[in-house]
Amino acid sequence: MSTASATAETGRHLPGSSTFASLSEPDYRWYFAGNIAFFMGMQMQFVLRGYLAFDLTNSASSLGLIALAISLPTLLVAPIAGVVADRVNKKYLLIGTQVVAAMASVVVTVLILGGWIQFWHLFAISLVTGAVFAINMPARSALVPLLVPQHKLMNAISLQMGGANFTRIAAPAMAGLLIAPLGPGWVYLITTGLFSLAVVSEFHLPKHGLKAASRGTNFFQEFREGLSYVRTNQLIGIMIATSLLIPLFGFPVQQMLPVFAEEVFNRGPSGLGLMAAMAGLGGLMGAIVSANMDSQPWKGRLMFFGGTTMGIFLFCFAVAPSFWLALACLSGAGIGQMLFMSTNNTVIQAKVPSELRGRVNSLLMMSFGVMPLGVLPLTAAADSVGAPTTVAFSSAILLVLMVSVFMLVRPLRQLKVEALGRTDLSPSQAAALVAEGKITQEEANRLSGVEARALH
Image (cartoon, rainbow, N blue to C red; front, side, top):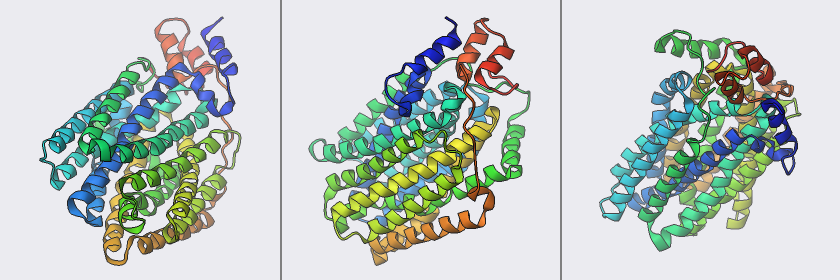
């Protein structure tokens, strides 16, 4: 049996429904495992940083400053990281950045256990973590279309995001429950181990097909090429611009969860972990729905439904009279957020040429760099008028803007993307067979659906 036939046969006989179709691809399974470990560490640190910042300062504004430290490198580093992701092997870029993340975790662990930790230490290490995230994520996102056949792309992206949202359930709960008996220092050490597991997993990614073919252009030419593509492609530009609404008005709520846990609901670290976990549960449910939406062509409608659902439930969270109702609202907001983000990401990955994905993903990542523009004023407002009033106002703005954008921008409202045709091989599988001399480049392009401009 040929490699192509074996691959197709494996996919047909994978146990379970089409929800998990992409896990029939061995390369994607290793990627998925590393993705889970990486985001487990990141999400646990999200809770730990918030807990430490609020514990050290007793101020909601400190949470905004930590968000600034995480997000600022995204604006500065992401454009450069996108070019790098398109020029180097993405496998080794992921490994290198995650080694740095593990080393940063060790530094924080030592500072906490030694009793030396101060807020400025946390701020400085958060800058490093933000830079790692900004370099890691464009390559991580650009990898997915290379590891699965094209007809499994939306499923693979949804599972990737679903796995990340699973960590938003497990990791915050784990961190919140472990802080009291172990202390934040030892919990930080656990995140070091998780980053190390991600590195081990990603050593199993393929060697071929994860780097765009060189065209002899220099770094700055490729940087300008990425900007030019987004500027001249109206739909991609609109989708990136629309994605700004989530970090501006949605993500700041997550930054203020420690305030709700401590001052609104009086639930402490365990309550913080539970709230973050319920938001992740909603995201996981949204990802499962998205994973089965391959055949749904009306992507604009999916994004509109997801964005407005998120706005409505965040408003309900802000005014919820009880902790348990607030948890349900966070879950509903997570469903909407994931429907919007996974659909937006799938359309961009499907439409952008493979040799430009790193750069376009880096521009998409820059949208997270605008988060401080929302977090800083909202956390300052929370200190003045209270977190519930602030979140209610922010979510109302998100809802109004989301409705307005989709009503006024016709190409987005009527966005329709048909399912990609079935192929036998992923681009990385095809590239490996070419490198081994088993098939020609022309056969690889046909079997994988890759454009004539080959990967090597």
